Length: 144
Image 1 (cartoon, one colour):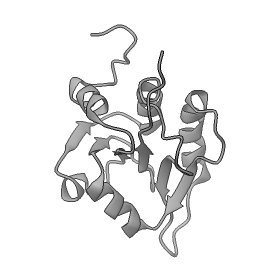
Image 2 (spheres, rainbow, N blue to C red):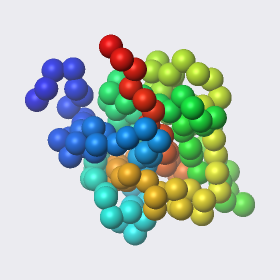
Image 3 (cartoon, helix red, strand yellow):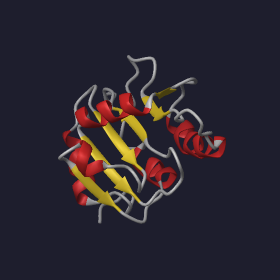
């Protein structure tokens, strides 16, 4: 165990976060997401909810400040409806670590899948909400 690092961050996830470079993306996927199909670098975080994982990751992870939207979620498929409480719970976990507003974009399901295929890694969580997947684009860590 390391001081200052949440116990929700596994050694494998910590290695991935450290290995990522500026502009790399990581998917925090819900339990229904076809992670293994989409990306060969898949990490298991079973039992963890995405808002909790966001609170654990974001103190260690700078979001990309050079893009309009460093956070990407899937928009609802025609005929479905989004539950606004999902995005609200995610933003509640994100906002303390990000000063920017309007940082979240929603994209088509298949465009999201393409991003996941090209992501640095996919983290399979225990999240069970519908449309609960989110992509984080890594930025440059500021000098201390």
